[in-house]
Length: 130
Figure 1: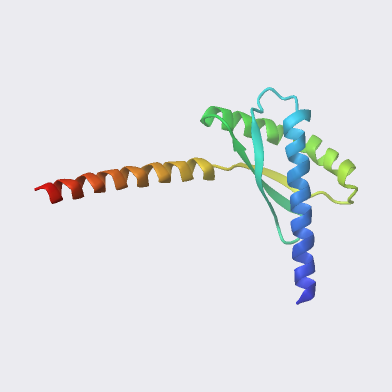
Figure 2 (figure 1 turned 90 degrees about the vertical axis):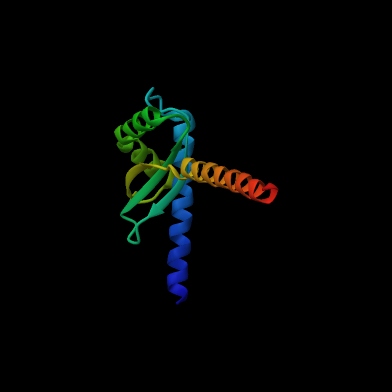
């Protein structure tokens, strides 16, 4: 049991380091014009540590998201090489980038719930006045 906790703790630390380092690269080192303002929202490391899913939140519309994803996928080799140098590990996981749309979906759900509440209040007030 403690061995599993230690493994999980190690994976969490590696994922956090990947998030910090890749985020720093996106902010200042990657000069690809396709990459717009973005940040790493989550890193999911597969149990074996051979691959990692990197979720990127992008400010902008669908075109900016697609361009940023293309730019990051093109820079994967450079990012892995830099991670190898910075982290001092023997193996760096294969990186796969995905767009994180959870904030936009959350905002849309909040908007719809707010609209439902307002509509529900109007219906109740007309029933009470009638």
